[in-house]
Length: 415
Image (cartoon, rainbow, N blue to C red):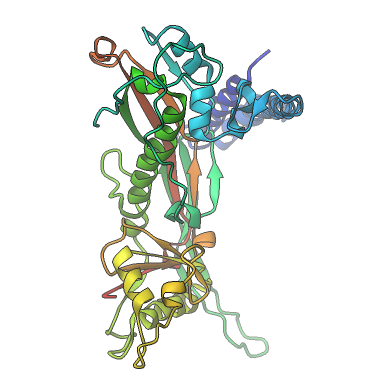
């Protein structure tokens, strides 16, 4: 019986095969139809894909039920599940320290081999002076207890990725259509006259998933301390990947392994420069941003739902005062969580250029696709790590950005 991953791989393999047939420059339509649907219209690649999709659905149902029953029996704890199928119930760091690979590493005394988190969906060497207390389930090693030296990150700022709808994919390529030209010829027509013809043109866009990854060396002493290992993964490694992801989603130049970031797409709305038409010399930063909101409404018939802005630009907006010295916002008593401007969500991002904002209809204009989630792996076989008692912990993800309507996004500069 196939595993869930094997069934998913089979669907991906057959889908790529079907795509190659549909795009074949040499096959006739009849040959394509036969290859896809078979001679009888009920076999061929389409039938094979349907069979394996049904298998994926059945296996996914079984895995879901296994996780549900495991949780009901109490086989997991709040900070992470013991059972492999219930790991997603804890944080990335909890999953790391509760994984079979981590426990195996500890049982071997950190003396060799490697492990992978597998289904976890989530360079200075990091060391500590003395070995800390072993994690839950491990025998004491006779070492002094060392208090954790890391404070977990408790505040999660809104990011660019949070503004887009999330999508998943099992293939490395995403294909969609983008509207390239519009001719609206609608008009009144006299009785018996010809009706004017409107036109829409579309272009095919292929988005390839890109990998974002990093690794950090950890001393064996640090790995032996369960609390610090969890904090280390949660607070640092995940943050590094997310910061790189945000920079790529906004500014990726499409060269080499880089994504084509949102700001490097063609067809974006015309940039609004504070103080220049359609903005006026008397406009403040809030006024200029509203000008772009209005422009997107008029040209794209979409309602912007959020904006991204650099920390300096947002700081000046939050500190802006009227002629009586009163804050336009709530001043020192403003709610810094769930920030909004003109009723639009605000993501403050250091990846934005200084004094710049990006206004957009994020929920309708684009989407972020991920293949799996954040994967965490570790090994001491890197370079001379085995000799130096170090373990390399690596985090990586595969992500792609689809922009369905580039004109749904527009910059505001000079804030």
